[in-house]
Image (cartoon, rainbow, N blue to C red; front, side, top):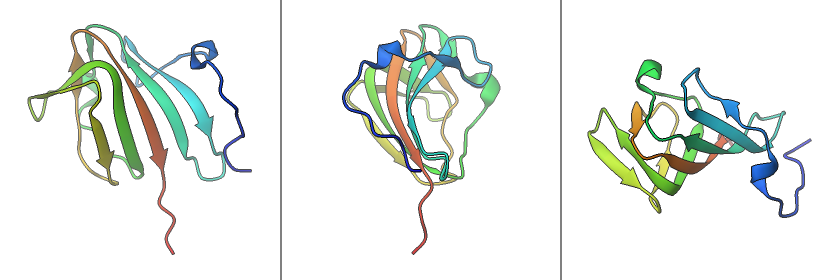
Length: 116
C-alpha cells in the first residue's frame, strides 16, 4: 500500500516524537509509505535547539524542506535560513548541524528516487 489517503486534517492532533535524542527537536509524521519508506513530516525546533551532537547530516534519500516559521542557522555554512525558504537535497548532500535560537518549523518530504 502507498501512503494513506487523507483529506484535510489538523496536524496538531498528531503526537510529536523526539528526533535524534536532541532536546527540543521533534517531528510529526504526516504520511508514510511503508513499502518505499517515503514520508512527509513537520520538524519542530524549539527555541534554543542545537543539533551539533548529530553532526553533519547525509542521507540516502531525496529531501525537500520548506521553512514554515522561524529560522535555523547552519553551523557549517554559517548561514541563517528563514521562513519562506526552500531546499531540495539529493542523496548524500551534506547539511547542518543546525542551531535555532528562536525556534523553527519545517515541512519535509523525503523519498527514494525510483530508477527507470
